[in-house]
View 1 (tube, rainbow, N blue to C red):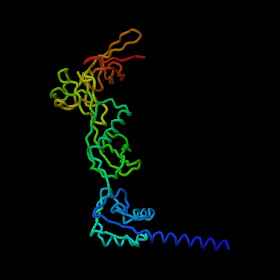
View 2 (cartoon, rainbow, N blue to C red):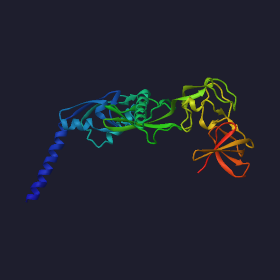
View 3 (cartoon, rainbow, N blue to C red):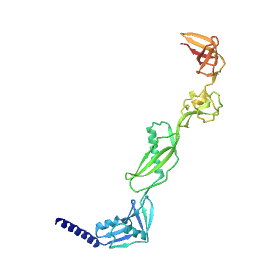
View 4 (cartoon, rainbow, N blue to C red):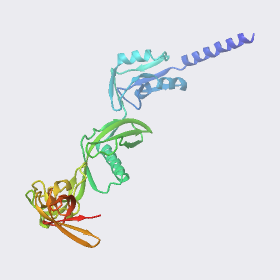
Length: 325
């Protein structure tokens, strides 16, 4: 008996709901333009809807008529397509007075993030990372691939930048900038930068031929861009003056230790004085240089009296000093 009462009650309420819809007609006036704020094209976004039954009115407002994939995109729906989509929505559209234009142009709401905003975010990330890395030299960078203006959904916008492969000196540095709307990442933009590092280094002050000892007038300290791989730049003029360049120099050429050599004071085959000190006793003998050598270079010399070959330090163009144990 109770089961029958429950069934009858359900049928009664179902009839009441049907009667309430039937008793609450609606009026829908669709505009020829509309603006949607998300992916779904809702009837309420393109039409004015009136109905005494608020529940039915909300159903009509939320009736889905299609999707808009991209923020800022525009679509046009004809009256024929609109009627088909209304019919296929599954919502009761009986007892509705419709006003439908020939076509509706619909735009998805958006905001545009400028290229300058994106680049500024990426540059700020590079600066932060360079400081964290302890880079003391001055530096600049060029934007190799400036991003385009990017369209994203409307809402509160924040930025987040990452340098996934770290700061690069020899190849471009890649920075990804995430555009977040309401806390959700809606776009990721790639930026590429070429880094330039500047330092105070020794350069040629004027043209100098190869294998000519450098004077104080030949070199100066100047702020120049330095390569990321080379590590043997000369930073102290004292390490350049008196040495020779293996190659001709033009004004402004960077000096590198590997390109500089000491003047040859003793040439291979030259007769020299071998000087040895032991226990305060100074011993000298004649010798034969077995290799070229500049000042303070160690070369092999042959004692012409005994025929013994020893290592010694070049003192001047005639003397090699040998340390005896």
